[in-house]
View 1: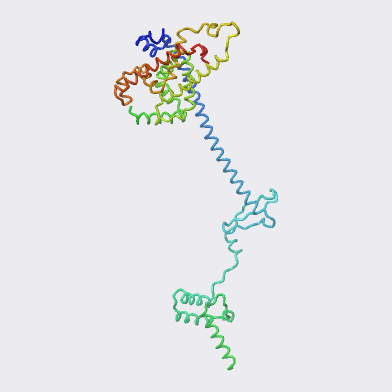
View 2: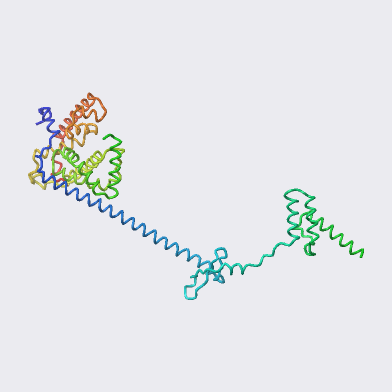
Length: 196
Length: 199
């Protein structure tokens, strides 16, 4: 049978109908079930892989945390383990690292020091002298406010209570006005000495 | 279900399947299995044995590649049909390669004659299979709607937002194209070059 001797309905039949008889319901169900089982197994496997991946990721995070903690400790140990540096004080944190003879060379133990000990170890800070306080006030009037008269007033008060050491001219800390007043005071002293 | 509902529903199904929800997969499978099987059997020229194999392979490929399925681009059924067409083409290619390498020795009869399975029905199925594969996609689509999904011209027109006349015209051209290609395979083609063995 060729193209030309086929009728429209025969072409329709060729296009439409499967050539084989309809399968039994049982056979179809078996195939359907088999494919479903196989594909569902793949889904199940995927779910397990996902779960395993989660667990693995969590474990990796845990291990990374441990490793970073270990690394942090190790790097502290290396710094502290330098020659002559085994008892480094960490004054700000109030902690110190101390070497332990029973552990490896770069191993250091972090120990806490009482705050009182740290305070005691610091050099004692002296409160500023009266001259110093008056000088600071005068400097502020001179430089911050531009009030020369008040600055002279306070400089004079400061020089009245100044010790000999404080009367000496210090070019790095004294203002031009204080230097002039100090020179004036020294001149007066010299004049007094000469007259007596 | 309109298009946006369909997309939302299939996105949810895809997400559930990717999360490992077996019930979602079973529901999706049950909803699409019959339509896919009918389509594959049609593309195989009615051969159940080939259809069984291609459908199996299609579902296994689908479960492996479901992550790549994008509901916004096509429906799940259309995506499955796309996979099935690729699987079918691979089968056709494998059969051609198989037959090219299996030649009769001396005066020995051809493979088909030897095993006696080269019936007229089988040859016809092969021709239909190859003819449908050779048709352009719009022709294949309209023939599928008409002969597999059993839709009327009006239904096809409504689904594609086309006029009835346009669908009728395309259907006529598709049928003509089918006849021409089928005739070519019938007269000049080598239907016996395709092995009976589907694998």
